[in-house]
Image (cartoon, rainbow, N blue to C red):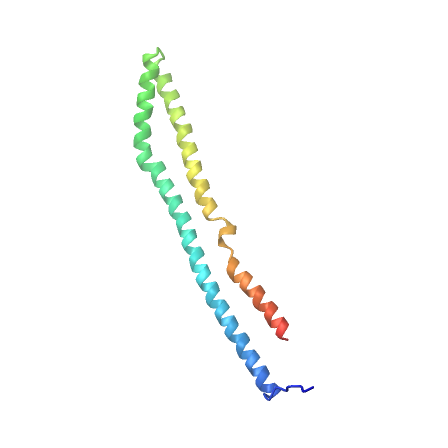
Length: 138
């Protein structure tokens, strides 16, 4: 039976291992940068939803809701309500509907900004595999 010996000296092997580990961690850092930039895009999408929701709630829907309040108020007056009470009730109804729509938009924006969407899952998994490989080599 013959045993094969490695002709490379121990210093060369350790130097090669150090170089491999260094290269591996450089690649992991690049992966982390890439994944973080992808997550940033996701976060910016959530911010865009929040801004869009705020603009709609303050501008376009404000004008539309004023028209709806006037129409509902006119309907209540036609049903025999006094004009002040009819307009107040119409404004309350429209306010409740607008608040529900705004809440839905804000909830969706907050969900996009949640901590779980910012985790670097691929990098964490890859680092775990790399650490296991390094332990195995040592």
